[in-house]
Length: 465
Image 1 (cartoon, rainbow, N blue to C red):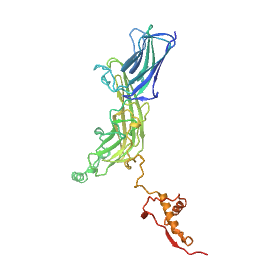
Image 2 (cartoon, rainbow, N blue to C red; image 1 turned 120 degrees about the vertical axis):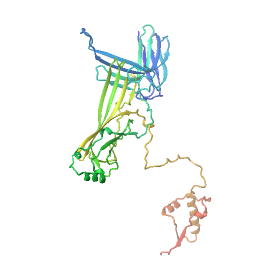
Image 3 (tube, rainbow, N blue to C red; image 1 turned 135 degrees about the vertical axis):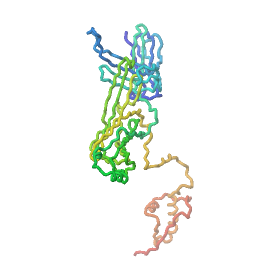
Image 4 (cartoon, rainbow, N blue to C red; image 1 turned 90 degrees about the vertical axis):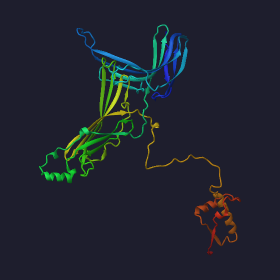
């Protein structure tokens, strides 16, 4: 008996990225060549979270046991079903049925307090993005997928035939995005630095030490407290601003005009992906880390005065590729990032290093059409109104053809008596004369008052024999 052909077609672009609230439409096609008895034909719209891993497995006294034990856990993020055909006997022909689903805003399952550990969510939450990762453990993998699946169950054998179309999903940011990232300032008191060379000074008399401290307190060895300005949340395409400022606690207003030199800069973004199979106390967890050095500069020789701020980056943006997955947590998979900054400093020949490790939340990307337009402060203008045709009115400019025709009538009547002795010289330019020569038939109805029409001027010239 020939097996029926089953196919799922989703409307629209196959590479479309769906978001919450988007509709998924399409059709299911079933071609039956011979009479078939089916139990049901359903179309399923669902999201899956699957984790796999393995661990060494040894049993005392049993050499034939497998060397590794495999673990796997599947979680349905949500599930929607639509029955197309109930239990029936199908005659040979082509069956077509349409479907329509909507991406939900949140997941559905709930788990107990101890399930999957404290690092994983247990309550319903926003849908995570489409995600796929292979861990460093043999057989280890983590996958989040969304799909539309047609499921045909045969009547007699109960055999199930499936056809699936995978959909790409990307969440929507929970906060309002702007073109400029919001920054946070962190004072690194734990990295307060003092020079060592100034500690060994020649002994001074008590009186001279007192007067030196009273007269010039800023000449003492500085006590430098660094502060770093960095963003806590960033979206693909946004500039990542990083700034550094140094404060001398012994000279708050920097009377001595002290300064340091920025010698080197290193910026690294670390990615940490975790996947869990089962209970956190009894089942394994895999962690995959990746460190990417984004900026590495040396011999910068950039001066930074105490009390001032210096920008460390000018056009530092995330590369919008498959690796740029937004930060998320779900039931058995997490993804997070850490921003590491290392700045080499110099002060009077001495070197010290400022280090900072802060969590970095990567927000979901937005389509360019939804981003606000860039604001140019130097150019403030209002858009021109749309053109709308209007009926002619007296406020409009006069008809110049009629003006030219009227001027021609006046000049011809006055020059008929002395056509050979007078040469007309108009106050208008030569282009006006060319227009007069090519004017149309004279019009008796002038649209311009006579006071506004320029009269021709005449000059008497001698007759050359």
